[in-house]
View 1 (cartoon, rainbow over the protein chains, first blue to last red):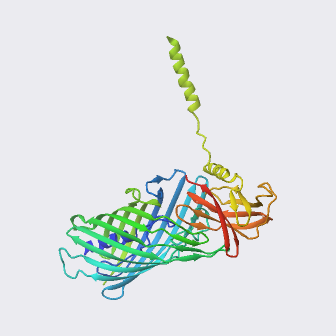
View 2 (cartoon, chains in turn purple, red):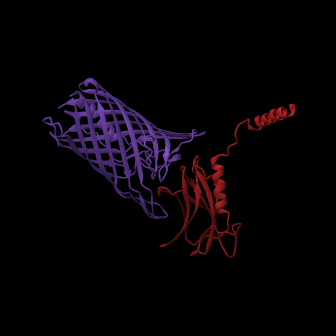
View 3 (cartoon, helix red, strand yellow):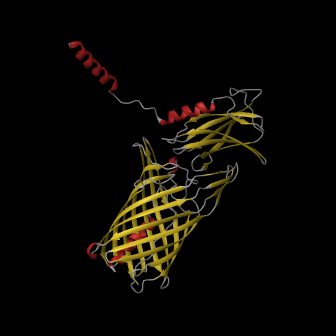
Length: 306
Length: 154
């Protein structure tokens, strides 16, 4: 039981870990599934992130100059509840503050990020233990462009963009398995943002985003089956180029991002756990056309028994 | 025997003198302004063939990422005038927008008429990277647009 709780923290973090610059990087998936034997859970996460580099178009890495400091603080609430034995639903609400300082110039903005809702189904329950058969859940997530985006931003450095700017639907699966003190998980997801039109007096600009996908592979260990768990994860994501039509026709560039994560979790009691996480998008230098972040996160999760 | 040592000490001292002090770094915005200046100062940089007009942009502020940039756009008849004047009011709607080369992101600044043939484009907000600055003439379904490039990479 203990392992399941700690494990659920990993699942939450892995699936939500795309906290790259709201303007560009990151994936659209959003997920806070109940993966243990709980009826409901609420997770509060504090995230502090700094842009340390850019991955230019074509790859490579270009570190930010010391006078250019861009940080993001996020308070995120994830709530999920069972609606039947195998079905669940949930909501994610992020509040984001972004600050960018370049020399003597500074811009900052805060507000709501992209809100998302999900419905999950326990497709492969683990009612009986099996050495090989995993537990699997499938989900559908709807993301609302409540955070604005670079297309809507008005402030310097477009610092007031806190989301992707598109309505988006996502579908995916979460597969979990543990053996003794070891556990592993895999999240795969694909999403489709919907087109939108920006109206302007010189003409309309149609933005046509393409498909995106992301995944996450994680491994963890709970030493001596105690209250602590240590985990690592790798989370790649991909966004197709955004095409424009109307005022100007063209095609953007694809975005790919590789996030490495290390996590320490602690089970305070059966229904309360917490976790500290460090993630770095510069360790695997295969990202493309995105800002690269280093991020610390602290989360507390409260659960209610089924 | 002493002279080589004196020369060496003198050389080291001179080197020390010229290498001390803070490196003079030109602000990035100045470099990019220069880049843009060079880009637009050739004759008829922005040629609107259907309208029979030439155009030029002159930066008032920027181009820079660290504050709002602004520029003027002037139009003249290629055969009858030059960028010095006299300017001609286009028989079309004047518009402007900027497009980030890498990502296709497009943004619309404010465009206000200053006088006949001269427009002020303000509220231009760049972020670091390569940009295209477009000027557009639109009359009905006929749209002509031209651009200059601006490099604001760090």
